Length: 80
Image (cartoon, rainbow, N blue to C red; front, side, top):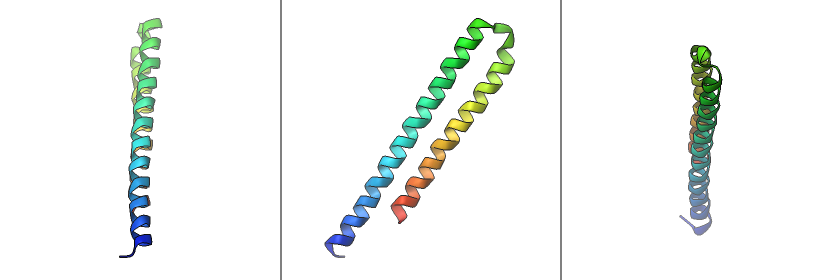
């Protein structure tokens, strides 16, 4: 294994680690913002708790799905 191929391999590993880190941070921020908005909405109109909770779960799932996509893309970047 020569030096240039080793550098390419290690750069792919670093790219994957950075990609996964950004995806995890993005998912955490997304769920946090969704929770913040849901709590504020329930505080204003407690009678709509059921609908707000449903929308919160949907938005949290969407945010986590994008984080999972980033995780998969990080593995693909490491393989290339």
